[in-house]
Amino acid sequence: MNMDRSWMNHNGVKDRRKPEYIAGVNEFLHSAFTGKSDETMLKFPCLNCRLVLSQNRKNMHCHLLYMASILLITHG
Image (cartoon, rainbow, N blue to C red; front, side, top):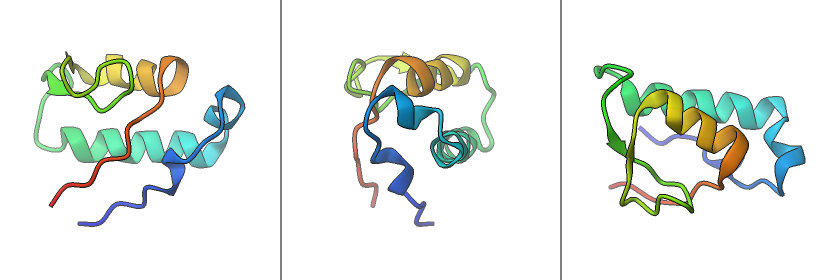
């Protein structure tokens, strides 16, 4: 499944409040956690975590909305 990644191209905190960005975050998290518990720890593509630190869904949500920018990554 190819997910629309246009929401990742934002310019600072102002754009993180836009409905398109928030919807993209929610779609990303839904996709990442499908079939998993919200407490499952997954490698997280944010600039601070650099795919090294694992986070649960709640922490990923906070990172994406309030703390960090997501890395543009491609799976496949």
